Length: 378
Ligand SMILES: [Zn+2]
Ligand SMILES: [Zn+2]
Image (tube, rainbow, N blue to C red; front, side):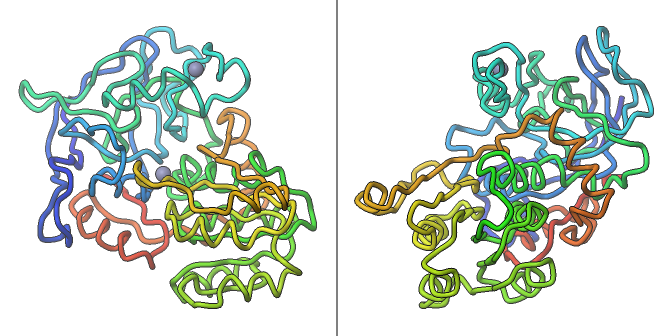
């Protein structure tokens, strides 16, 4: 069938993308779903910093096979299911997940599907976990970003990468659960497992950081310190329940946070994928506290913290990938929290954009002040 999509045609284009235009809207051929696969109408797909990292070449470090359809945080409607898919039917609403976990490697069997061992191989090749690609332009193959390829009117995905949600959840909000919400809230609830009354700092208020803030609030953390270079984001953070907002570029940021939290926070979350943010996160973590690192940085960076304090202050530094989540367990649970008003994801959802506006939208994302933009492809 014919489908329009936003296709990444080259990596490392100079900004602004509104001029260099690395993303092009193209009409492609899309195969129907094979065994274990699902054809999906994409109703909404969030624009995430990881998509930007694929465009500008900071990630993945290994080569991104081009051309490729980006987008790894989407919500849509099942149009057709392939052979062997018995638990989804046309009309069902689903949210995508971007780790195509196999269900039977050691990590999957240990309940940590975000760390699925074969998954990175499929993602690096730009193919589905069922093998190969489903988009074509003439004889040319178009690759799938991390098994999702959400920046398209329709996409084909492996059934195991989809989680069914209730019929009355708006697609634009549901999409954010696929990356930002699972990653940010998951870092707080799954990776850190904070307790009510623990003090928290969130460094970097993108979609993941704002989600971490909402998660910390839901879990009863206090105080919650928000850290970002944007005054607009800091104002929003205070509105969403942060008790203190600090500009990350102010020279006394660390001292102010330590002073107002009796020597530092129990848990600091780095959600910017930047060495400077990790440096702040580590330095504002209290003695005996935990620094959770959830932002995905460029592949060549080394962590910047004091070896001695790690020992003498019994610090913990903990990585968090995809919120240490089990999507089939966590996604419905967090959607329920959203429906009950406990997780106001609408407040961190920004403008909707069309397929033709993706280059401009990634310029906006790169500027760092906009809320999570959501592509509505058709
Ligand atoms: Zn993402
Ligand atoms: Zn696995």
